[in-house]
Length: 448
Image (spheres, one colour):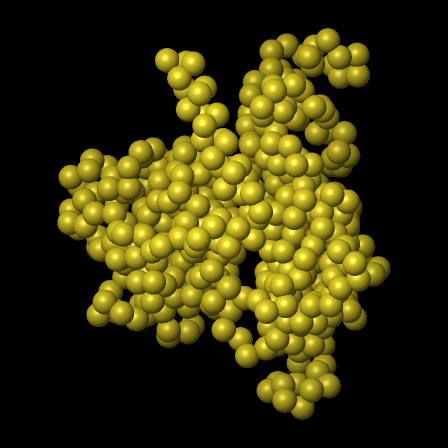
């Protein structure tokens, strides 16, 4: 198809760099990234059911060339800090080109004059046409897979301890398209949805459910005493009045999952909303990772090697928390949970009884625990940390006898909600998963 096209010049053989299963305008598609012998990148969308090619674009057309200094520079108020780099579409990492930001998963633009974020896109799907915070003139900090907008201003509220308002907005280049807003003070945050996306406010839960070309949730998170109140104009324009609170947006990717993965991811989301999960770390390879911190934690990835990952974590707070880690199966080559070993400060730890147990770091004699789920694309781990100094978490794989030395089997998972809709807010999500499962069984049967 590419070689026969008059619009694109393919040099030599094509190499498949990446394949992602996505939902594009209510159609399941494979987003296939290819590279020719000249390094030209091509993105092809293929209907996952029929195999028909839907569209094809040249990624370089979307990313105008700049010299390496401009393309890789960190940004602070739009000024070049002089750090050199090159554009990357294969790692979770943002590249700044003028006021446009390009990542592996997330693209968006920023208007430094108005403070408005526009054209927020996850994969091939536009999500927000606009995100705007009232009275907003932030400083921009760019670090790998995170863009952080920060602003401090004098507070007019006598209740503020230090008389300062602090407003932070983070955008993370990861498969969830995660956005986090942290307001110490009062601000209105307005979200205008893109074409193909609609929203519905759940007043009782104080959250906004997105549906259409993709599914996602905008919700208050954490234990703060503050509030988030939504107002709406139609099903496209939503304003969150945020007072001393945190707000999170994340999508619910449509991927092939086991029931255990489905349950695990819902439990993680619930834990974040309740303030029980203090951070999420996604590791694809040694050069591609994303860390999202919801609590006052310091996290650094120390080791990423074949079948071993190690992170350091510390906090100025004394109370414990639970952290979520997702590691690509390209790194942790394992098929069963019992072949995964979790070390906490060099010592093997026990598996938690269930999700209620793992979300409570203060029980079990204040001993660290873990839960693990092995999927087709990654290994997902929860680790409870009962108290803080500096700690090291290591995930490694080996023989079942070595990994099972702790003497525990997989825990009994808590009952799932009656329907997938109750767990995800995504109507028909279970049907999609069931259809994909049947499709995979059929294809595997044909191969055999």
